[in-house]
Length: 436
Image 1 (cartoon, rainbow, N blue to C red):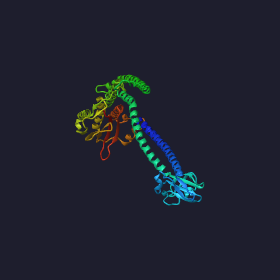
Image 2 (image 1 turned 90 degrees about the horizontal axis):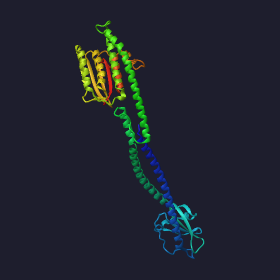
Image 3 (image 1 turned 60 degrees about the vertical axis):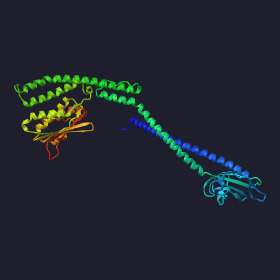
Image 4 (image 1 turned 30 degrees about the vertical axis):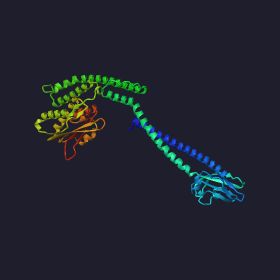
């Protein structure tokens, strides 16, 4: 995704390039017109000088009464030629024609023509003193104009390219500086979302301040909605607690209807209710700033507790978790997630549990595998279906997984279940948590 700076700089560069191309073309055209006018003026002057320097004698011969200051007439194939025609005969021509028949130069009037060597030339004609039927024709090379114009255009392109580069770089720096308040606004909004500030400060720029004010209003509305949700959650949780306590007391040992499964279910429900109350009391995710909690100690404690609870089964544990990794979660979050998941792994393992931690692209992935029987594939395939919940699994597995998934989702992560690939057996649980 391109930034505003790149977009604007690109548009400026394209506009500058187009303007420079047009400028170079216009300047080249003007240079060509100027060069042509200069050549025609020079041709007019030389034709006038030659007309006064050449005289036709009575016997019909041509005489140069004074030298002409133009050495190009003495250089063969120079493009500068003169010829004197009397009637249908040529009575004199410049050395530059190299003896070739230059009658074609004297066959027309003023304007462009073809020289004795096939080159493009411009012609001017004059009458000569001493006779009325003798005409002087002077030619100048037009190809020299093209070479001069091409050289001028290249020079213009080089200069324009250098100026364009300076202009684009300068514009990019100006854009970068001009967008500094926008970057500050984005940073302030990010800090607001992470709980580092209570509102977006004013930038002094009307358009940006209108955005900041809209974000502040949205943030206030979200906080207010979170407060209402917290109150609703507290009211609902308190309403559930009393009948839940009655169920727990009656189903516990010594109660009127002792039932271990009902008691265990009531305990899990109470933990979920307590957790929701705790999170609601904190004001929801908007009230939390970024938290940095070490991951390895939480995993060590979860393994220690599960090892003691299931100590009679002699489960072998492999924990591959580098130290120093921190996640954006509270220690309570980690205890809730991994306490239940590690306990589940121990409960269903036959001989071993493997835990592996890897960091990748801002996320920390914790994989917990057991060598038990896993979950039926039909159940795994049905889990993504709309309305199907993890807590529909067997008691002691589903609700713990559901709690872990909900907590991971709340803090910006996720939980994925899969059976291990044959020949290995058991369940593979991968928890993704945001790195702090």
